[in-house]
Structure formats: structure tokens, C-alpha cells
Length: 243
Image (tube, rainbow, N blue to C red; front, side, top):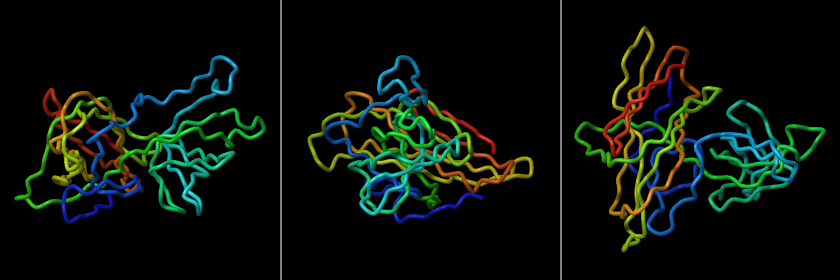
């Protein structure tokens, strides 16, 4: 069964992507987030330092100085780093973060699990929360890019595009969250109906910025399923996955 975390308000303040966040605020009042592709591929042509560049969604671990020293990929491959990796958003020591890791595979010819870390982009981690029926849940539209289940079944991931631009007020910030609408029985197994929540927060809609999000699903039982609904600029869409 999923671990469901309640929180006082549907949408919380911006926090680094420590596993288990229920709601977050997107800092998009000024400069937008970095843009990345929504595919995980290895570039293996040529023979330069970056010929073995690879990107993976990972659970990355920090040391006592809040620097990343290791990670576990969604294929359950454990990686150790040739050097600590710093990230502005990783501020908590001895912690685990959800991230998109860019690294060099050919760091140690004798050990394929020892890699050279290059950079890491944080991935928003959303935990479903129940809200009261009378609660107004914002569902401002986003651009849908893709959704997929991690190969190890530990996460349901999706990539969306949010419209953003430079706002006149520092109070203008977008917020996102995840609502558990209901739990139904399907073929003798629980089916979780989740709704993505998004508030534009008076942020101008000048250009699109892609962001990654992950829903922890390690506690899902075999046969259980998730039905995710999102409001897009083309209307509501629904994606369903079974474990």
C-alpha cells in the first residue's frame, strides 16, 4: 500500500527534493529552470571525455558536507563517485535526494560502478495527500510531455511543461501538489486515483519550462494500480499504470 502523507495546506513552500515531499512551490518569478530532455540515453560515439556521458534518474546520497557521493539508479545499479558533487539545492547532510544525474561512465575502466559525476538536476517528489471535499484544489493547465514507471517500480515519473516568465511581484510563484481523490478496488486490488494540482500563482505565461516529478511507489503491491489525471492546455488527460 502507498504511504499517504497529510499536510496542513495542499501546496507547501519550495523545498529541496528530499524524498517524501507532499507539495512544493516553484521558484519561477524570475529566471526559469534549466531545460532537459525527458529521455535517458547514453551517448557512446567518439572518444572524448564526454563520449560516455549518461543520464539516469537516481536516489542520490549526500555526505556530512551535503555533497553527493553515491547514487542508486532506477535500474537498481549502485554508483560511487570519483569525487563529491555539489548542488545548490542539496543542503541537507547525510540525506537521500531524488535527482536526474549526469555522469561519465568511463571514469574507472576496472570498475563500471565508479563514475565521474558531472551535474545533477533535482526532481520534484510528490506524495499523495487527502483533502477535504470542500477544499478548493487549483488545477491550472500545464503542458504534458511524458509519463513512465521506473523499471524497478519505485517511482511513477512524469515530465510536464509549465508556462513561466518574469513576474512583477516576488510573491508570484507557481505551486504544485498531488491529491488522492479516492481508492477503489479493481480486480481484487487497490487502485489509487491521483490528481495533479497546479496553481499558476500570477506568474506570466511567456515561455515553457520543463520539469520532472516523481511519485514514490515502493509500497505498491503486485496488482495494484495508479490512475493519474492532469489538466493540460489541451484538456484533461489520464494515465494508468499497474504494478
